[in-house]
Length: 118
Length: 219
Image (cartoon, rainbow over all chains, first blue to last red; front, side):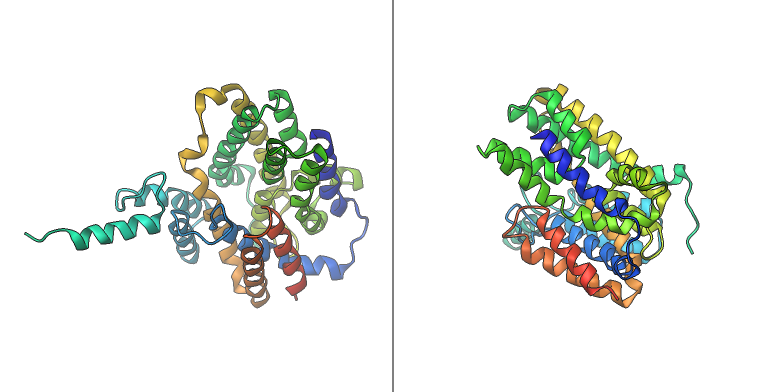
């Protein structure tokens, strides 16, 4: 299995670099690859195990990273801030391992509504 | 034209990502041992395949009782996108065909994304590609090794919650590219196709679909 998968992966990665002269029409088309693949990667990261969009702690990570990128902050700042966003949010919400951000926010709102006024 | 970054600057940028990849690799090592795969085979797989989604898919097929052929095909399908990224990075790689083919093995989603973000349209930055790829390759293999050795002690390392680094990185890389109209078109197309395919196909195929749409919508 290891050797079969390794061989297949090697060939797939090697095809492009191994080709002598790739026509300009093809290489120009590859300019669309990066944004499409990156957007797809972001989207896939935001899906749950069933493949459907899932509102969890990765959403604020994406929003924060986009916001900081729009402010033209260095990439490292955007990534670290995004990665730490879930931890920063956890004290503000009831988030913990098994509960999504959406669920915890909903629960928090419900608790606030049900809280008896003194 | 963007200023070229030094190796040190690239390493600093890639550090949080490398940490997340390391944790991911430890997870793979832990799960491979739990699935009954010998430690040496798991490490060899990481060293030769260097593709998380394909490795996890193959592992999943084997643990579900599937055949070796099915596992190989599942992993191979998930790596289809590397044909497109290989074509995209071909002009950025140095040397003759054989050297380029070997260096092309360092192309993974993250190294391609970093290089595309640091380079010019249609020409990913060579230094970023190679430094990022080599760094991630090292932590991927080392993480797998650690996972196979310390698996029972570590438990499931994904609970550390570093997985938010991935979407943050991809977003931060994507954002500056969206100044061009065709890039916005390709990004929307890629996201829509990926989300449409994700519920019905194994991980990796949505990315392959998005890659095809990006190639189609470009220009």
